[in-house]
Structure formats: structure tokens, C-alpha cells
Amino acid sequence: MRSLVYREVCDGRGEFLPWVNALRNQSGAYVIRKRAGLFSGPQCLYVGESHTGNLAKTLKRHFYAWSDDAERRHQTYDRNAVEVAVRVTPPTSAVAAQDNLIRRLEPRDNGYVPVEKPF
Image (cartoon, rainbow, N blue to C red; front, side, top):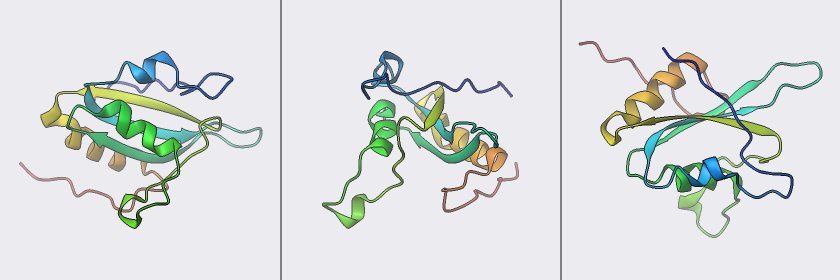
């Protein structure tokens, strides 16, 4: 399996970096992890996906708090404390990529571990 490349999501002013905006009209899976600290290594926080060509929007929503609608609640993170890796895939492979990453990385904030389907 290819290794993941983690990058910062914003610049010093808190603006999203160009690579995040370049994910528009893309599908795939993403990993959000807490950066390594002085006395600890990085920690995988969340794995998600977009299979509808909204990868940039889906990823960015984790950096904004939504309180207007209970249905729209989701995990939010401090964009200055995390780094993100993205695996761009065809729309039909995004969910499988997400599920594989969840099983492999065991993120802290995902509510489930997908069962691997036998062939």
C-alpha cells in the first residue's frame, strides 16, 4: 500500500493552502491526524471520504463548527494543530479507500470500524 503524505492545511493566517482548494471536483479519502508533540507521536483522529466530487468541501467542514442544525454535527479540529493526508480515488473507490484506512489506522474519532468483506 502506498504511504500517506501528511501536510499542513493552512498558512500562518489560517487560510487554506492551495493544495486543499485543488481538491475541488475530486473524490477520495482523507486522514486528519494530530501533529507530533514534544513527548508524543502523531495521533490519527479521523478518516473520511467524499465519493461525490466534493473532497475539498468535505475536508474543510472539519475545520468549521456548525451549531445551527443537529443533523450537521461533525468532528471539528483546530487547523493549526493537525495535518492531513489525502488519497484521491475514482468516486466508486472512495468508500473502500476510507474503510481500508480506518481499519489500518484506527482513528480516535470514527464511530465504527468497517468489517472487511470476503470475496
